[in-house]
Length: 146
Image (cartoon, rainbow, N blue to C red):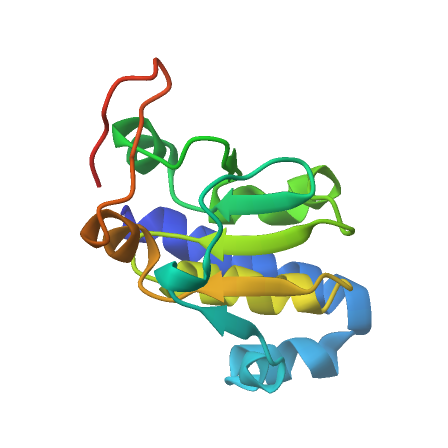
């Protein structure tokens, strides 16, 4: 992943927190305060085999990662775009969040908790998905990779 894009995404998340609850909360967030937001965790064994409108797998990886391969039926919103596109995420759906290994999805999950969502972070991310032998596809339906 491009480190510059990651830095921008983290800054956007921190800035939107500043806009929402003020400078004090933003300072807390920048100094590790995001850990105060508890996020449910699941491993690959705890994930359903298929996703739809009521059970969503939100993939927060970058576009190039998504294009190489993703889970069929997943919703793709790169981490840096989540603040601007949060309205596209159904707050009533069972929401799983995934990235490459679990770090970015954890940060996005913590962000979503602050806005009333109840996300479940997928520990191990797409690496664990692929390691479990679950199918990975590309946009044209052919086999993908992580």
